[in-house]
Amino acid sequence: MFRGVLAVAFIANKPTAKRRCSRFFGGMALLLAISATGVIAAPMIEGTPVPLPPKPNFSSMQFLIGTWTCVDRSSRRPGPFTITEVYAMDPTGYFINRNDTTHKASWIPRDFHGLSRYTYDTAANRWVRISTSDVGGYAIATAPGSSGAHRVFTNVIQKQADNVASYAPEV
Image (cartoon, rainbow, N blue to C red; front, side):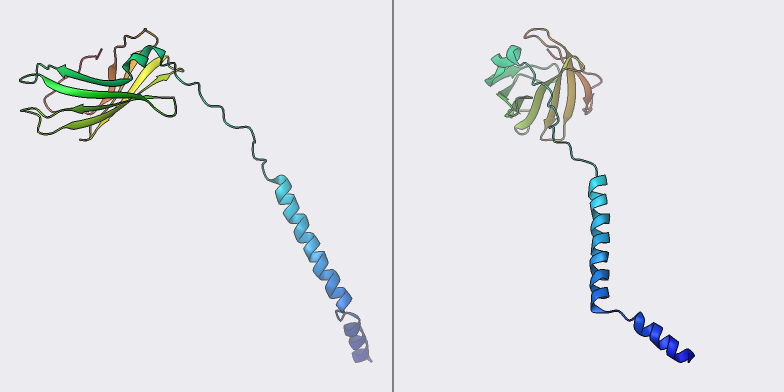
């Protein structure tokens, strides 16, 4: 008799198609509820764009735009040498770019090229010049805020050159 009761209980608990279907949809409903909770709890993505800093006022430097050829003299060199500088506005409006070429001379083995970028740091109220050269040179120089068309840049960071003890500010 005991066996008959177990058999009846087993048959009563045997899954039917209806029970299987309700288990499946119940499981799906639970999965959707958990997924929806994750989506609702997820952080919202900000739709407002990050504000851009104001572009520098380059009106006092506009006269530089174009090509300049200069003859320089240095107390460390045997004679004058020629440099060509090409100034142009950067397409972003945040920089003026200067591409320069120091031309070959009797003691200059080849043409050397450099790139300098000028911008204004409104938070620090200063002009900034970032320079690099095709032989690994680099420098960052700053000049005090608004002073018309005249700026005196002082190197803040500069790759040291052999046999040069110090550098003077540049006008």
